[in-house]
Amino acid sequence: MSGYDALLVDLDGTVYRGPDAIDGAVESLEVARRGATVSYVTNNASRGPDEVAEHLRELGLTLESGDVVTSAQAGAAVVAEHCEPGAPVLVVGAEALAEEIRLVGLTPVRSEEDAPVAVVQGHSPDTGWRILAEAALALNRGAHWVACNVDPTLPNERGFLPGNGAMVAVLRTACRREPEVAGKPAAPLLRQAIERAGARRPLVIGDRLDTDIAGGHAVEADSLLVLTGVSTAADVLGAPPEQRPTYLGPDLQVLGGELDAFRVLDGDTGGWTASREDGVVVLASGADDDAAGALRALCRVAWDAPAGGAEVRAADDRAEKMISTLGLATG
Image (cartoon, rainbow, N blue to C red; front, side):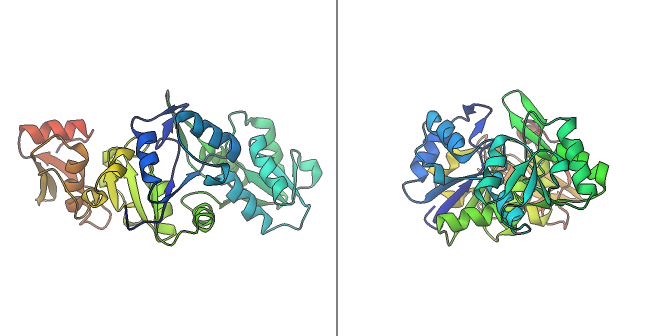
């Protein structure tokens, strides 16, 4: 950890699922904050930083509201770059997003009849057809479009729910346009967090390859993927170069140990080894049941291919069991 001065930590699927903390997350982050600034960087625009911070404090974390950076804040900042002060902006999302629009000196509206010059879209569980229709009218009239994020799913304690990206897809289909994206994997949200933390060498931490890890690459920062949320072992093996993490661990408890041991390309694999035979990646059993270590061993071979990924086969019975544990299909 001594090589990093700030941790930029995702929330949904990384620190908690739904209202509940993931095992070991709180304790690990409390230890980590003794040696580095910990910022909580979320693509979810449905809650303001005060509300998010209060939830995290209820879970047992020590932080101030300023330690939370949301995609609503990043989205509002991006919108402000395209608008004159006081300009009307149509908000598709929660009141927290409307408040961020106010804070950057713009006027949030909910109807196309208010002649919005921009549309900003963030997650809200209450988004329905009527507000999407107002947004479509504004976009078809030429309003600038900013999406706080384009995550297709949102993990919670019951499983995966439609995320903001699913709602963005509705307007993309209806209007045949693409939004400017503020949240991960685009750089604005993480840059805002880096600037606020005054970080020179941040570590981006999250559970999604296509947002958290790709976002780390976008700001040229190292990254840690934890296997507690969206991305699976199969996703990791098939990750393109721009989505490959520096470190890979089962959960945030890796922050309490020697982080270098969890480097994908040259960390500890618990004795697990992999080789390529006739285009197939063959896993051979190690000294323990470290699934993340086995996955790191597989990645070292699978990532030799430009696009990553490969058919996987077991060299022995323990490796066969491990491949099943990782949820990988065998060849």
